[in-house]
Amino acid sequence: MRIKINRKLAVVIVLVASVTGTAAMAINKPEPVRYQNLKVLPKDISPHDLQSIMADDFEDGLGVTCGFCHANAKDGHGLDFVSDAKPEKEITRQMMRMTIGINKKYFKLKHPKIGNSALVVSCTTCHKGQAFPDGTAGNN
Image (cartoon, rainbow, N blue to C red; front, top):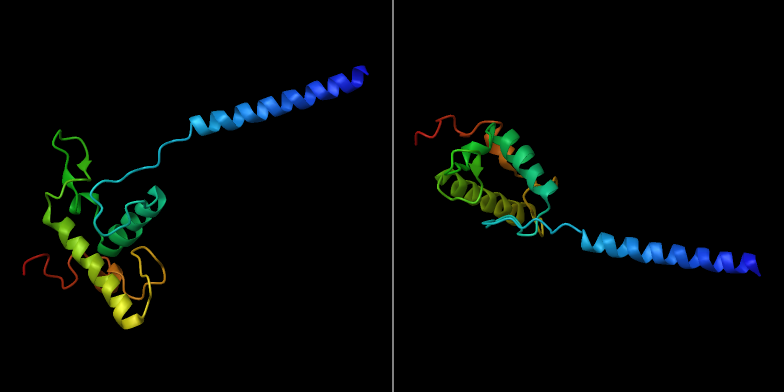
């Protein structure tokens, strides 16, 4: 009889610990990242996907760093990723729309997305690691 009580007690303890652990995980679950001012990229993009697009597509494809498109923060520390103060940011949006359109129209990709390796035309297609693809360094 004593063994049965100990087993029942052990089962109850395991169940209570399991429920408590599950509740604690639900309470401590971090809020999803909410990016502001995304106009071409999906608003629910994961931090990993956003970093991959910024580093692999833009930094590597254009040979630039974040400050090429993103304005300095007003307090002088870092960058203001939300700001549209630099025209390069809107130009980048136009270029993203253009590559999505080209891939859709000419290569019949149904849902082309920036950062997708299935894209036939990407930043690197024209830029080849240069900020200005025609070599004019912005002097048009």
